[in-house]
Image (cartoon, rainbow, N blue to C red; front, side, top):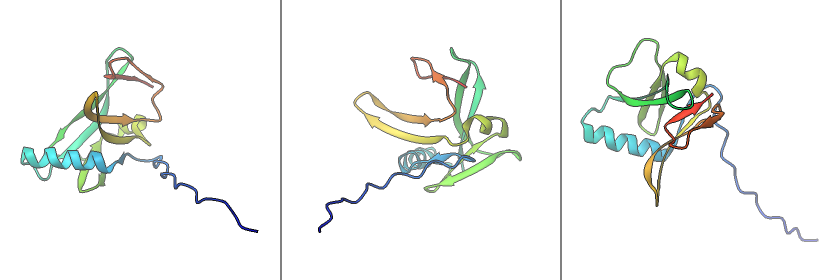
Length: 125
């Protein structure tokens, strides 16, 4: 008897519950912007700040110097840092960069978020 089973499509591994996952697309775009900026040792700081229409907004900015309490995540030749308080809300998040008909930009794929506003600028936990 011949088996007609087909090979299963591999599924991506779930993000680690303790950190931030950086996709290859996000890494490439951060490296491109870092190199254009001329700061080869800079990292991207991600975090959470109070505000916005649903309670919190994401922080996304350059970090030319790291703080002693920063948590560091490295992938694809780039560094992403966050503060310990923000990491509580960002654990398991995937940072991606997408291009599409509606434009391009970084996406925070955060399993901890309970909701977001229509403008995409704020998040609810």
